[in-house]
Image (cartoon, rainbow, N blue to C red):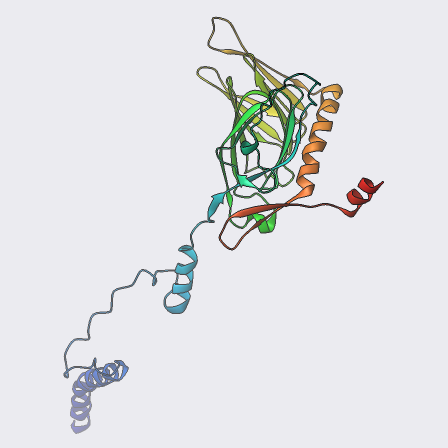
Length: 307
């Protein structure tokens, strides 16, 4: 009987010892300065900071938050460089009015592309290099303006126009575009009196005037959005598109057809002019953040000049 009584007494004392042990262990786990008096409740946990998310806490969480807080690539103003200007020779004893003002045509250095405009007359043509590794050949009787041109700050070093966006207005004339580094996600835009072309092609011809808008592309694709009423049109590679205004009607008459060999062959000489400008001009960013251009002349060119 005595043994049974001792067993029940020991069982009654166990919860008390267990509770005391848990309090001591809890006090040992608390950092210095946070234990308080015996029996006092433990302080509430500190609130989770913005960097301590479910993704992780401490250094790992802060690193992940820092990555998420990185700003998007900085966009800078793109530049344009006039590579070639061709003018007809004036006739003897005949007054000739030059349509191109000297101060409107950058001769030795690049100029900010945004807001740049030029008007070419009969027999005149010009070739331009752009800082996103694109080049443009403007045929005679062409007038165009650069409405906007933005590009990524690191695109010059990579020569890859991931973030560039070029917008032009073409009231009349013909432009040829050469954009070897353009991707499907970086279109360029050409506004005409009939509508706007959104172009994703490395080799394209665009013309406007007399109520017409024309586009031919050798690769890639493009979209045309008419001004006012009418539905858009999709133009695939190897095709040409023509939109013609109709008298007394707001809607345009449009057509899409395969690019004939003769049309494609006619595009190649002006595109070669644009390619030459692309190869012969290099761009760099100066310490003050401005884009500068320089001519790149090959030894073969100098040898040909001597001969």
